[in-house]
Length: 269
Image (cartoon, rainbow, N blue to C red):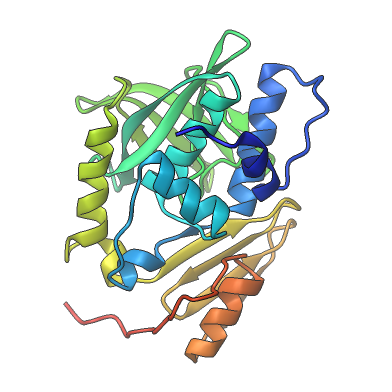
């Protein structure tokens, strides 16, 4: 596939001057991607297949102006970074849990800019960094919204962990497996995420989009919220399918043309 980098830039609202350093370019691409292409898992929720190859992600996220989850988002971002001249590869990651990490069902990217390695992730709907983090140990790093640090060997299964500062303490956010992964491995993981009846994306409706201005929209089942740049949170509840579609379109910036959405109440365990 010949990647159309200019079309991708237009999709994420990015205009470059051509004078940016590699690091400045990387940060701009990361910020514009994560704020313009929302995290959403409507396809698994609606029992629609998900493709994570370069052609499928470009068609869905760029041409059709949809969002996606980590295997789609970070596949597209990796392809875009390569087309922009960066040295980058995808890695498996584990989402942080209380005192430990979950299964390796998350994709991130490690990219080099100006001789420095960065962790890039535009496909995590939680408290993910909107700017790439330098792969530098035990140093506090801020993306202007939250404070993070990277530590080494948090568990035998993880080479690094990205931690986030919450209530004065650092908590595990993502555990990184440093070895470059094969694209086929991501396809297998995405198949589980998309199709397993145990997948959270099959059981619950989850969406999120940080904004360029510093705010963030989120949705979990019917419960929505908007956090403004000052940290004030507005909570609301969506009651009808029409309200969901309007929220997807107007706040999350998801193109809903030709997509039939139907909310279903979570089933008790």
